[in-house]
Image (cartoon, rainbow, N blue to C red):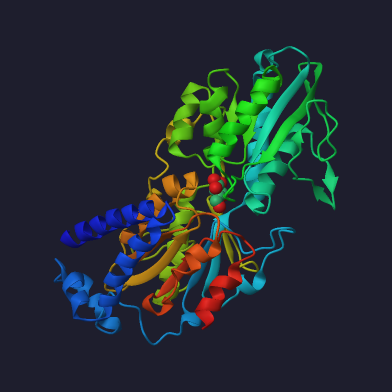
Length: 460
Ligand code: BGC
């Protein structure tokens, strides 16, 4: 009991330290403070802390060498469990997977979600909405259904897939090199852009034109992508020059979608669609937000830590995933798939609309089928280094990290959360100066091409 409390307080403090990391310069201070504490871990000081309120079985976890809090010193960093999450090691131009990063060692995995399935779902959700609301969707009655699109990161495969999903469903897609072109078009009010085409939808015996009026990568001047503030500014610019033509607002994520909704579409009753099912976006469905997609972050956050746990315990990787563990944790195959060749776990997506949003109001709630505490005697406390590429990313900070913090206790993992600035890889890699202090690593890169900057540190 008491142990749990101590862990929860720790988690709260860690949450604060990550929040503090959001503002660049502060990181160092916050992080140095933690490292000082960590350095003390190897010795007697740690025993005091680890034993705090924990005179029983949990302590037996120390069977692995007497010090439950420190990394197991005899494993080389290059042989420790490693999980990439949310940003899959891949070529940011072609999307080709970086298999050397994904097979760094035999305990390496990726956890994300099925980007194509989710993208198709988002496109279909928007199309279904148009069909169901055709009597009021074409606001200026010109027979053209106009939409604008906020693009997150042109080099991120999730973002590319979502842009393609919208264009495919609405008939505005154009092929490029055998795939749907996902380039931003700038503005296209006259329908002349070459990266998209005007689509047509037949609804109730009438033919409507569908036009992508504008799209833009929402990158701020400092280089941060998926930038909500940039999206808020963009809708301001677009609406002031062709606002009456905008019938739908689509976004690669809810962070940008909500920024546009709050800045313009809510007041103008223009349905806005995002992705992630962050709590604020789900709540906004009651106020006219069109819908979002849950990428099952509750399943992903579990998988991210669970694969590390299993590798650390030396048990079958499927334990507590496709096969129930002793506590009864198990995932059914309607919420994830595992692709062995890609060493990747993919959570499945669910559309969240006015019909079902009541079931999704708290995005930080852990998934009940995998909510049972592991026995610390069999799965002793281990130290994990984990980074979030951008401490201010809406989805990762408001949904994913709180979920990780809920699961780390259940899985007996002591996780150090590092928050990056969203722009520079070195801001994060600089804080992986002493990998020997950790038993396992969970990495969320700034750029999907940059896996080698992390593996180089583990290879040293
Ligand atoms: C989420 C975005 C987020 C991005 C960060 C995506 O899967 O949908 O909201 O900004 O991950 O990498």
